Image 1 (cartoon, one colour):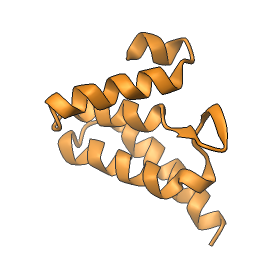
Image 2: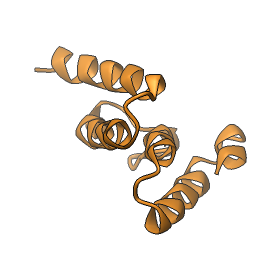
Image 3: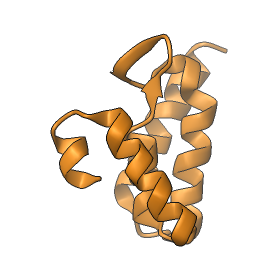
Image 4: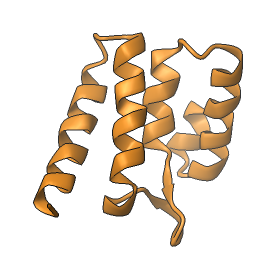
Length: 88
């Protein structure tokens, strides 16, 4: 998943992280990367945006429930919460 994510093949990477979580749902890093590879269904191949804010928040929260030391998950959650608040 990491290599696919690095190459920008987000849909493929996302599927790989889902497969990891099917075997180990307590893997916080996979939850983090699942959020990082979530795409916008209206713009395939592009990262998730404001319309996917609620889903992103859930993914980042799941990452933090499994590993409260994942600083990038806090940052991602902070960003997404800011997007959602600006639209309220």
